[in-house]
Image (cartoon, rainbow, N blue to C red; front, top):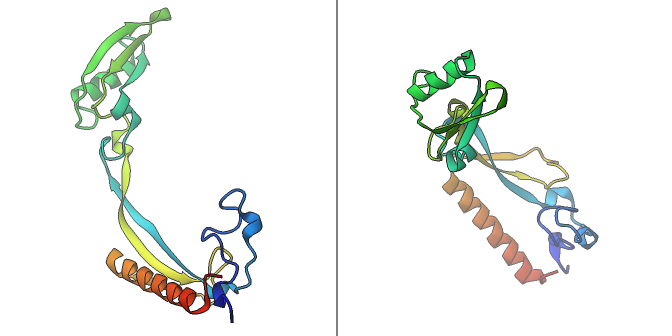
Length: 170
């Protein structure tokens, strides 16, 4: 039995995933002959601008207001830290036509959307039967931690390598 259940497999990402390789797919194995490994994040937590690589944090930013307006008061409160507890220092004021002023902020300061930044906190590691075509058995195995998932993935790779040795590369 040349090739075993992996006969015809060329690209682990599925047909069309890599342009030009779609024609290389001629799967003869049933969808149940595959196992897929994955990770999904289930929760997020608040983060700083630096933690999310916020472009305003990296490059600086500007906002346009009318001096003495309600918007200017909001910017002043944000600079003083009264809005969200994060102090900011503007670098320069640039007068604009029609009475507007552009307020420039240097890089390295929290932006005005800093309170909305979030990062993944908890991950869910799993493997399941099937591939991109589906999961015929419905089997989904959740792993307790990343180490368990990596161990299972490694063992699966060793099983595939053993089959390739036994039946040949194709």
